[in-house]
Structures are given as C-alpha cells and as structure tokens.
Image (tube, rainbow, N blue to C red):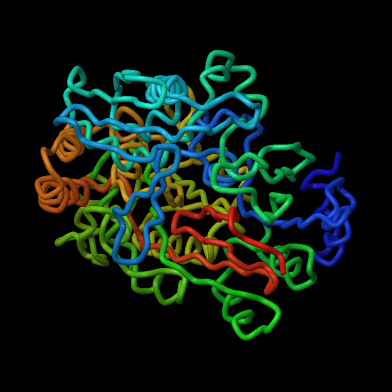
Length: 517
C-alpha cells in the first residue's frame, strides 16, 4: 500500500507525479472520465459522518451524502436554501418544522430512502455523545407523519424549530439500517448523492458515478480524492496534468497561474474566519486579562498586508457571508500599552513569570499560516510572551488542535479556521465557544453561554440579528476566548478541460454536472 509518506519522503515534486498513477487508480482507465482532486485535508478512516468535524473529510463526504436541503450561498443571498432530499419545508408553528421528502431515492447499497432514515439520522446526530452534535441546536423529536413526511419538534427542549432550518443543509442523511449497526456505518460511506464510494488506497479515495442518482448520472465516471498536503506539489501536479483540481493554492501560486492558458483559476470569499484560539481551561489563558493582553499585542494590519488577496479584514466571530455578520465595535485593537497594563494587573508585569507558550499552526492547509504565525509569535514576544511556534503538517495538526478526553489539548494557542456549509452562525459559535462543546479552546463561561443561548432562542430572524450584534458578539469580544484574525478567501486551480465544476464557499466542490471535454 502506497501512503503519503511513500510518495513524498525522499522524492521531489516531480517524483510524485509518477507515483500516483501507479497506486492502483489509473487516471484514464479504459476510456473512463476520471477527475483527480488534490485535497489539502486528510480523511480520518472512520466513515461515520457524525464522528468528526474535520474539513477535508467533510468535503469528501459531500460527494457521497445528501442533506435535506442545499445552501449554495450565492453573493447577496447567504440564506438561500434549495431542495435536496426534501422537496419542500414549512414552519408549522414555533416549535414544529415539516419536511416533505423526495420519492424514488435510493442509497448506494440499494435501500429506498424514506422518513425513517431522516429520523434515525437526526436522533443519532443530535446525541450529545456525537462530535457532530456540536452542529445541532439541541436535541429534537422527529415525528414520522408518513413515509415521505417528517416533522422536527423542539418544544420539549425549549428552543424554536426554526433553528433547524439552516442546519437542514448540513447533516448528511444516513441509512437507518447503517445507524442501527455502527460498525457498518464506520466501515464505508453509504449515501444518496451523485458519487458512491468504491475503495481506499493509502491516502487516495476512489468514488464512482451513481447510475441511480436522482439528479441524473454524472458525466464524470470516477473521482480520485487524493490527500496532497504540500501546496507546491498540488500546483506542480496540476501543471503536469496529474491533477485536475488543486485545492487551497497559496496567493502567489494563484497569481502566477491566473494568466496560464492551460489552467482555470478561482478566488472566492468563504464561510471561514481564521482564529487564534486560546486554551481557556489551561493557565495562563484561563484568565481573560491574559487573553486580552495577547490580542492587544497583535497588529492585524501587518497580518493583512502579509496575507494579500488571501484575507479580508473583519472584526467579528463569523464570516461576512454568514447570517448575523457585523463588525464589532470595540473589538480588541493593536495597543501595546493596554497589553502591558493587563499583564501587570494579572500579576505578570512585562510578561515576567509567564510559562513558555506553545502556539500550534499548520503548513499546506491554509495560505501563509507559518508566515503569519511567525509574525504573531514575534509580536507576542515583544510584549513579554515566551512563545514557541510548532508547525505541523495537516494530518498531525488535525489531531493536535482538538481537546482530548481529559478536556485538555496540546499547547496553549492554536491557529484554526472553521468552515461550515451553511449561513447558520451557530455552526461556528456553538462548537467553538459554548461550554457544551468548546472543541478547541475549552472555554466554560456562563456569560458567553447565556448570550449564545439567547440568540439561538430568538423568536424571529430580526430579533436574532439584534441579539447577535448587540449582545453576543460584544460579550465575546470582551472575553476573547479566541481572537478572530480575518475572513478567509480560498483559491483553486483546475484543468482547463474540466467544465461545470461548482466551487462552494464552504470548501466543497460539486462535480455532479461537470465534464471533461
């Protein structure tokens, strides 16, 4: 079995070109139309979609699974929802939302899709024991009205059913038969979307066109989803014809490819902000004054100058393409004097007495993380923070950033983005900063919990917007469990003969209507 290490250790980028084609997935076998996608993120090997919140695997799963709705999030319409496995939806009352389901849909194993699968999925995914429960507004009761109608009911749990509207585009619908057998669920992905899972070979996953897809069989016969952590290798493979799509280009790579007649390039604002997460359940960042001092030590204008086209200045905990976005008045600015005042007040004048602080970042996953990580570390050191920067490849970084079973995580600070397939702000807010999850920073602050619960429970979108902008975000900016650095743009390169690919603002790529011409 050829692994990522076999491909890259001891081989230059040119050497990698010949290895992929010999790994068992030929690029154009027997006249098939095969797209090779060079992904920046790995998959975990556990095919239960509720077992993780990782971006690379989530993007892969979008090829295989459908949700009840789709959220294409075009410019100016972030809250647009389109039918997927549900053909229509109606808010029956404050605590009940009804979905009418599409008929004639089959899972890839041949099972007919019906209301029982929706109930099994929502019951399972909203279980607080599942990592994906952090995407859910809370527990929910699912009533099967008939085989093609379900109702989500929230009255028992004290929040409005409308909280599930945007989430309906997020949760991948699982087969009830698979949910009843977790070992089967973990062993292979079994969805209803345009491509079905075939096999895994090292760091490559092969999927094939679903002949019975309700949207029509794709023109692309196969997709090889290959984990390629190094951005230079992704670009070189694109130029050499090894890859048809290269994800997450560096800004300089995008600029150099824009005028290449053989390559299509794309730049777009995403649903993702980049954050400096503090480990709030570990000294010294269990003290909000130390967190604020760190924020006031960072000159974000210098970071934006470094990022160039890859970042957009913003001062909010969600992206501008999310519902509720508004720059926060009084967001922590670069103010060394205030940083020193806070350090002294907390008992660490000029940083004296602070422990060495590990700052974890990645390379090859996001643009310029190492470069601006070095810049942030230098800024913090100027104010007396003793910072050690740890730079990891994506697979190791994915493991390091999350808190473990004991509640602790590696290091003291982490550079992480949070890209989600919906305009729903709670997909970012609750997993990261509500004490029921706080997957990375570990914050447990009753005041933050209260303002997050209040916006979730708002009676209507207008009231919710007001609470978000006037209470939730200002409270978070005061407590800074994490520091939102900027809103992220992403760059793709693709072969010119690949037409019809749709690049969504949350990282997924839709090839259901694409073709190689």
